[in-house]
Length: 229
DNA sequence: CACCAGGCAAGTA
DNA sequence: TACTTGCATGGT
Image (cartoon, rainbow, N blue to C red):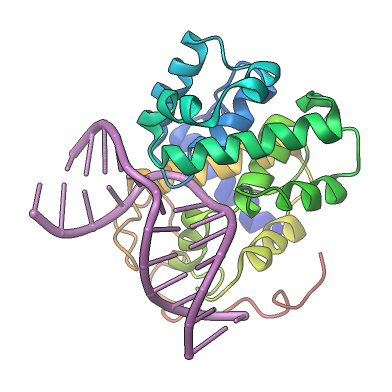
């Protein structure tokens, strides 16, 4: 299974090329982008980040001091601007309380412990927490999103009912814990999902050639659902 | 016009 | 555990 996943990775990489994720000039910008992109097209997040930069607000100190309502107006293009302003403030408060306002310092504690603390922040769920760990702090954590679950289902690698944690354990259990690999793999799965593979379950136009012809009714991969890491 | 986009929290059953 | 709803703009 490891070699099969790696083969898929190689195919995606040669098809789409390196994705250069995560766009962002600083770890803080990556975190802000991770929150702003929740259920939002990245194009609109870029506008919000431009606004933040234009107002010189992409800074932990400034974000701590700005009023929530004013922040909301600035990130408006990203949508859900009221809740996202609250979420950004919640993260920044957490950042100052526990890490002196420095995103880089979060990486000094154990990854599992940090993940748990991030999940305790209102507005940070699994995907956002893992995106922060991988893309802002370079921790070998595989990010799972809707594309990833669909990807596994379409290619008969795993079943649809798999939970976030099961899918994450699946990837991390069958791949070497490599930051660059996890970074590129997740980004490539998104690229694939955005190009084609939207027409489930046929996956027409997919550059991959998996399960072709045979294996019509792919079930869950046995031995992975309750398995440990 | 409808529908989706790199989710999450709170509520319900 | 699994499903529903609110949040809201901008692109196709």
